[in-house]
Image (cartoon, rainbow, N blue to C red):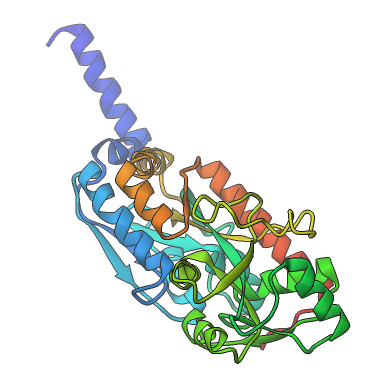
Length: 325
């Protein structure tokens, strides 16, 4: 063997010994990847995972399995990934609930959402919408605020449950407007929407993905979106900031994470693949059809979103004196 070839082989062997993650990343993936969805099938997180999964599988050349592990408001599935082997083969389809709300709501969350995960990339942002019952004669945000102030505690507002992102969005609305609404928590968006449609509650803040069908067919009246800017799916609906609540913003995010300690090269290989997936016209079209705003990010940008949202809702819980059982 020539001297230069011998040196190259020795260098490669040395790199493999000193940096085993480098060799792992070069070959990754060599077996199926499991994406943990910490909720039951059928919701936004599950639907999103099943949009991303097949395209990611095609790019990486390995099967991507969507594994639903519901329980504890997302804590069970998120905890499973936090304790998983940091090799890139077990991923979390993480959202605002488990990552930026549950650590505030639950006393014993089985993970640290900042320290126990390696963010890979954002996938989408889902705005919330402020809707009113067809039987409730309010068409503008200002009208709702004025009525709530004149009848404190009389106007009812539904959410998908105490301690959910929807609930926190309601409390943020109340704290920024002084409107004292009566919060009615339900066990999920489905039951809450049923009561709203029937007129048992006056209004609701919910993910656009859950409410979109009822908005499109005219059964629900939407008076504002909670995002920082108008959403493409509802271009004529103003934001809350445009409707007299300057600075208001509340959305839910969704992204992919690996266990902390996953080699950087593997994280970046997954990030590059996810960026390609999110840029696919078919994927973007399906997300926008759900009312979501698709968009990839760097791992650092995703981590910043998690931390900022966690601090935002923690401060709100403290100032609004929110208590959770």
